[in-house]
Image (cartoon, rainbow over all chains, first blue to last red):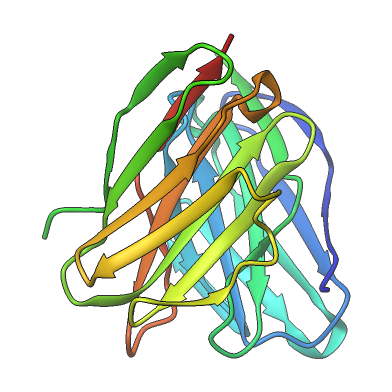
Length: 108
Length: 113
């Protein structure tokens, strides 16, 4: 099956700092989503981005499908950004395969 | 629209007991997924239904686990008999026919003692 690797595994930031999270995947995909799991365990959709670039407020994502990676940018981080960020990929109409996540802690 | 609804939110049960987790997908969604999250294994797919038919159950750990989807608005995941290693958060998710985004419920937190 598809392998998904996320880096870094852990990240500690001061409030206001910027960060870049990376997702590498082992095969061609036509579905890629970024999720945020908040401290209460909820998995929230951030982006559906199998290719190209999208922005939503302080967050943006870029996927370079031909090179099999995706990046999630967080600018001006806030304490509410803390949690685990997951990249998940899939092909066709199959279920998504999740990476192991990046645990982000934003300190005030 | 209401989101994916799971019940119970929390359950503590004794080893050997039967556990039934329930899921109501978002109305109009025809794909339903059960995932399990543990510290050791992360988020892993258990089973995936499309139009109420199981498409991929390769992630179901063993015969103690079974899942059904009797209609488009309801699915169950059953563990019988439960074991302490089944302790995890079980997530249900759904996706609509023409969409790609998967939406998750809030999870069922299972503890088997």
